Image (cartoon, rainbow, N blue to C red; front, side):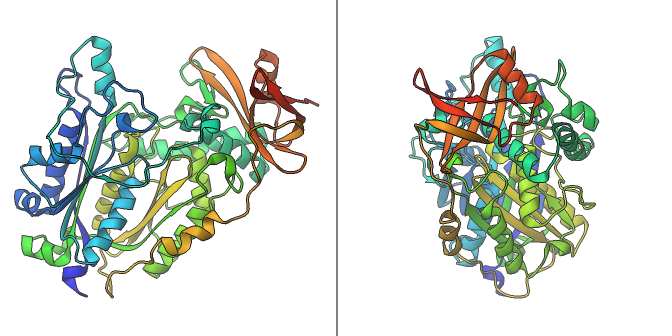
Length: 512
């Protein structure tokens, strides 16, 4: 093993800040704090921070393309601001684009840099403080500290692309709570479940995540709930996008941060890091599904996750049966089920599907949740030397994916992975239905959801197909009877007609 070119994760730091908004930290303060904790976790502390030659800060939610926050862009260079707080000045300083896949993508990318001799010590850090920000706005407190301009242009990292087409945006597809239920209802059809059976399964699946979060001291919502409580609509657990209740949705309004430090083995030894802190990345992969939700192969699979799993496991020389731990990305149940199906993991696998607790219960700190997953995985494999863990990361709407396989066992050969570009195009070339923005005529429902606001049901959203198989998006009539029936009758495959009404695609279902 060439220790100068062997990447290793050596430190992880996390924080959950539940202080009152008057005292709670800003997101960049949290990023700096978890960086210090990661350096201390590795052992060398300040000496390690001074050795950092690359930093990547995870993009804040307020800086997402679709965000409308008054704080958008007020931090003009987040990584530079964090570096100033830490008193460091690495040669590489990046701020990332949006996507829940980003933390694992960064581990994969910088492991490759270390293996290529392009970096020796890398800090990956991210945090959100949306709960504090919103609370301060509600209380009329100033946000003067939530801005900084260090006078250096920011360098972006990651794929900068709109989450959805303008046509998709007109139906709200760019919002996760709108798009993920479309996958979920399609999965019900794939599994052959009734509405009642499916709702029960969702509760059972996420009760297992919730149970882990309830015992995790870093969880934002450490409250154990029954499967029935999670999946049954109530005054405190309303529907958001049918069939998802509030307790089945990722919660982004939290204050949480996590950081990871990677080095070469040689740099770690030079700094005095002990072997029992070292965690190796045995396998990894990155892949995207067909970008636009309206153009997917179907709503029950992910060719990207399937391919990514095969590549990462082959790189590690392992199988799913060899994995001892999992942390499956869990913004919504459909993401969990599709990932498990593609990776060959049972939904009720006895090994468990999360170490962290899931985004609805541990907390969903924007693009940085998976940094917490990686930190938890590092802790778990350190406590179980020689065992292996797999985690996946998901960005946008089962769109962007990354995967990592971790263990304290050193690699037997030099670190090398297959270039993701070698397998990406084949995924994008998979056959999928043609799409039209102006459908007309007889049609059937491919999948659907019924969307709710705080005051109740709002609209029905259909992904349909014309007689020739061409796919389209449409809303349903907004009368109460139609919307209620869509929650009581399985509408998958239901026939109807689609046309433009006041310039909007409208599907009128034909209830039997």
